[in-house]
Length: 119
Image (cartoon, rainbow, N blue to C red; front, side):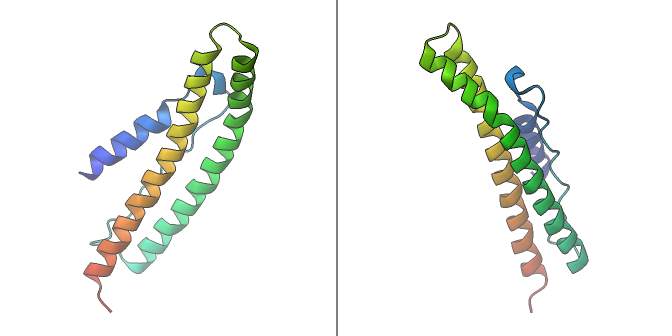
């Protein structure tokens, strides 16, 4: 099941538009298995998630000029601008979804860790 989630996440991260060719999406971190991980592994996972979130924020900031330019072209009525805007929005939204997926999966692993290690 986790393989499917990671595959979907990789697909979301890999679907960048040509507008944002200079921007590189960060790789999703490998998360610990909460059911079997040690506290140290969970803390390392948390650190990796925070680093991913910071890198993803930088990536989204990199995408913003292309998104704004595409929006300006739509406003000006440029031919093909709507398609460019849609592509830019999809790329940006994929970055947001990737971050949500990583955070959600890590939260699942934390719950599994807590279930496996009751205090």
